[in-house]
Length: 196
Image 1 (cartoon, rainbow, N blue to C red):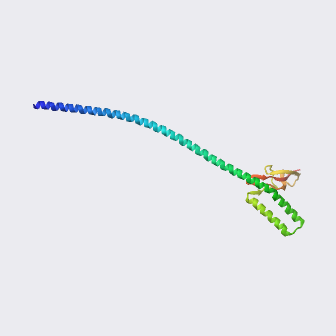
Image 2: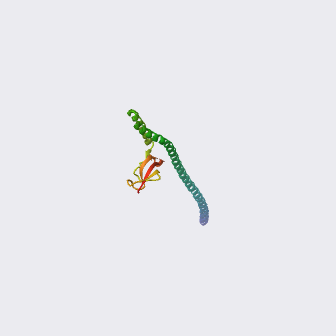
Image 3: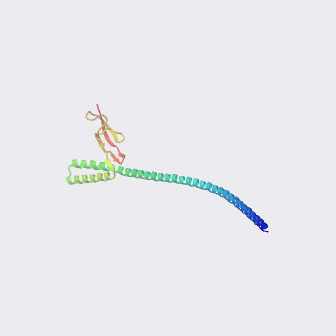
């Protein structure tokens, strides 16, 4: 009987071990299958993440290009507005130049006519005030006399032959020329000398 009990115990141990081995095999197989499934799922998520990252990079690139285009548009618009503003100011200021010319001619005439000094001083003050207004608006008179003739800044209305001046030199200014910032408002009307 003791032997039988031993044998029953041994068979019970054996069947229990076999059952445990089967359980471990089943568990190992289940874990391996789960591991494979998780690897596939991880691969799918990696692919989705790469696609999402690619889309994000494309969108970011498009955003940066759009931002640069907008900045360029803003700068061009600002430059264009400043240029238009300067053109309008130049046109308005140019219309004042004949008034300055007339003031200067009237002053010369008044000085020659022998009227009172207070009248002459009043005319001089008005002319000075007008010229100050133009200077404050960035209008400056061109220095032309004694300078080489430049068709961008001078308009030749007369030519003389003279040994007193270098060839193609402005010998006399007939009508003053004016600049507004970097543009010519009115070229100076000049007499140009040539060597004999």
